[in-house]
Image 1: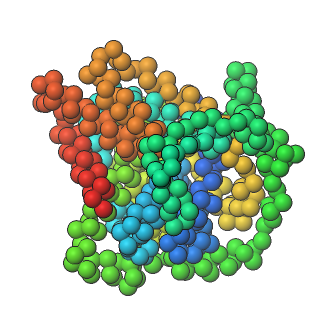
Image 2 (image 1 turned 30 degrees about the vertical axis):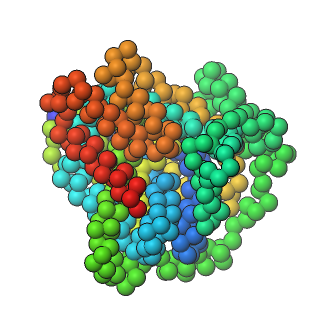
Image 3 (image 1 turned 30 degrees about the horizontal axis):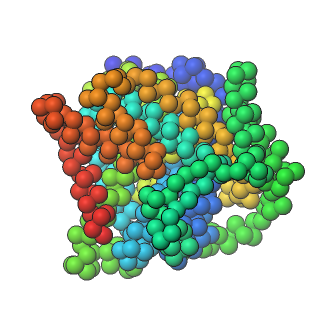
Length: 484
């Protein structure tokens, strides 16, 4: 079987097996562009988040591009799957606000921890531990993860579109150093008045994509993004005034990259990370927290998007379970993701991970690595075209995420909802994922509730050991985060 799988992966004259995957070059390129535009915000957000630790923002900008391009190219060329990678939102916030601000580590030390996390991810991938985790997840939770990612992606879109505001009771929030407001559970969401140009533009984009999809227009999502961007010009939501290409600025950015490149291994990084005996346990637990979130974010994304769309076929699943080495797409995809984190840390950015926004490209028809290669090329072009890419407003990309979320929620239909033994863990995995704004926390809720339900029903022996250990590790992680 392994030989046939390998041949199917590289048929003669068709490196990406486009025909065998039921796609074509045109569709794959459109899908790659769609993925890029829905996640390009990270190029501008990541430097702002990490820059608060006193890292050079221009250096972080280039590090973000390099890590994203390399990781995505490896994903496309080695794994032949349509996923894009970039420094993860949430993980970069953990890097800045928890590791550097709350725990008091230098940014160089935080990069060293991220690098070690990447090495750990490589080891657990090579030793097959990651795929053992995947095999241990019950089908009901896998389906809930797929639907949960749909809610999560749609929520990202609704939030990016500016359709929500939150009201918090007085005295129930705190102000961080960067003036970010962290509110308690007293914050109540509500829809905003539909009277601002950006909100109206986002609504136009949602309606347009729906109409195009109902008319079976090829490339509907990308067409919707481009058309919405153009419609936003008269109202000022789309602003091309700063869309100039300056090679002088690019050269300056490359010179500044030296301030972050290799900083993880300097005296202020790896050289001092374990120097204080009183902090060694804290360092280990922080690395563990990085690795746990990174690992389950990736696994959740693959399970939630790959199996429903056929990217990871039944034959590939069997190769994953029975094969050795990297004979399945999932094996190769997990390896591509695992090396990206260490590469990113080397250049100067937080954990690089597989992006859930890849679902937008998959929703646009992307099925092979050509989608990823297209996205990677766009990242590379952003070294000089960043001002142009930055002109695509959130109001134009948010509708794509909302519609893709709708597509992905079909996985919920496979869950036996009347059966509470199956429904409670599925609810934990699917709903907490969106409400906690974290794929890994959603999986944690699903695992923990699954163990509780099985124990309560006297079916402890049905709990897979890996799932049980993972649930315990999640609980320990929550305890550590509560203590620090």
